[in-house]
Image (cartoon, rainbow, N blue to C red):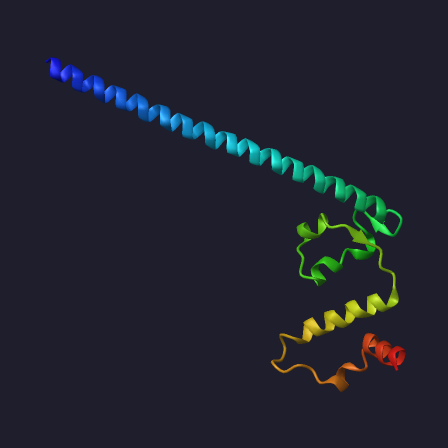
Length: 138
């Protein structure tokens, strides 16, 4: 009976030691996680400050924060979904060469699935964007 009591006491002491070691490990892990969280928060604050500085610099240009009626059709043109494009900053783009470029890209995307061969260059030269490139660069 005494031997059995000593055995149970040794077993209990071993469990206490193991529990204390596990607790110490858990406390170290929590401390490490807290340090990482502080670093992440500092990085987030720095990134927010940089973003705010960039926004201030862009306000000098043609930066638009909300939805633009002239750009409602463009997100799908670039393969972005309606939700993905809602959070993107928008720029006014009433620049004619840029509009012609977008039409050129849309044309290329529309003919890509239709044929395995790339379109011949003479068939593309009639497009306004390529015509502009040829006339302005030569």
